[in-house]
Length: 585
Image 1 (spheres, rainbow, N blue to C red):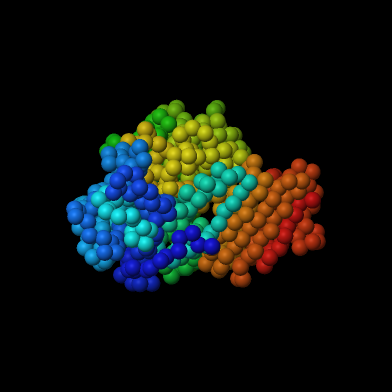
Image 2 (image 1 turned 135 degrees about the vertical axis):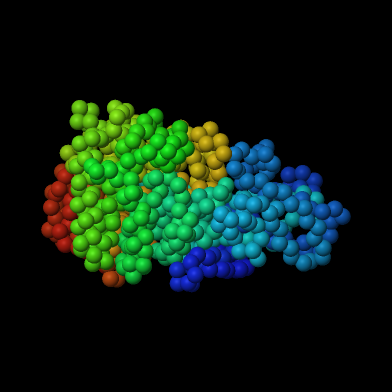
């Protein structure tokens, strides 16, 4: 069932590029409160259950107060009331209205420049100011306040269907983390493009790519991601590593849709995102003193960099450059540009050899932060591992070292850290980091009462953080991709990869929307590993099962099938389709 059921569609618009085909359709949905309580004479606290970006409609129903009514919007509570002085960029707004008769009035927060002036992504003027809030305090209401008299008008992507994607596992806390992160993606679609949160309401390339991954895990429609890409083409941002993220976004679009027409229209612009203007004779990207001071970012905020030492040749920046070259070669190949594909591949090969020679320390088996320093940070190792830059015989040792360091980076770097662990045999550690005790995990957000993911792990790590940052929602894509085990193997989902990474879990079930229809998976791991999947028409799946101790064969559809064991995986040799159950024996 759908969690949010619109009681009325108030207004819808297309937001994004000039053509409706590539524009994201955002609408206002009226939502009733989940609870109303009287906290003082004439004062009511209204709870909408989760934070959303919006404003209010108020229907007095012939209530005519003698004085204006005060409404206080808030993301936070303090001592049972809306927090009027919340920390950092956590939102609070106060409005006075004087309703008369039974006429419904729209109540919006006061106008602020960050919401209504460029370069912020603007909401449609007829909607009024939107703010993120969960609670509303109503003071001066002369009678009982009823649920049908107050509604939140919340802005969401109109293509989003709440239960199109599901995830449930044997770990209840992991399920709560997925719920938080999945809803965070929906709630932050309010602007029609992926923005960095409410403090700036700007599109940034890294934020956009991480959000795109999680959005595709909940909605197969590419329009909002493409609208974001178009905006970032016109308004690029400053960090060195953010430019290659545009290549990542285009590659993710191609893998999701298989649409080479869209790719061809944007291909030439992608070439400008490779940092080629900074490449030296040895193929590595060089950073000037100015770029070291204001350009190379590694992680954000700055104190999340694990003591990273910045040098003229930065390991993290070069890892992004190499990954972008890899993906550009594949994109050129997809467009039939064989000469350019070979050029990108050769450029990547030459730079990779120098990368290994100058940045890898064979004595420690770790990557240095850059040329000229022996410091080896978490980040100098997690990004090369996540991007497949590390020789196969070195990966396990580096993955194990990363596990020993824990969550020593921000919620942004966590996307790539956890990818590197899942893909290199450390799935139990990856899952443990997601739900770890302490204040550097998603468990901390859940137990703190967050309903949208935060910009940072905690207020103390970024005092000006906002509480509605989609780049903090990485488990929304990581859990379907790795714990459930579903990823596209070919562009456009003609062929999927089903490869669960169970860690310590004993069962997972869920579904993911794809351009070809719903793909559902259920697996259990007890004495044997049993996986049931339903693959939509027009798609086949390569299936790999985690090899349990003592297993010697694989059955599918009640009969043995050809499969071979390679490392920790059983690989079914023939692709599967339709609904089928696979079991290790």
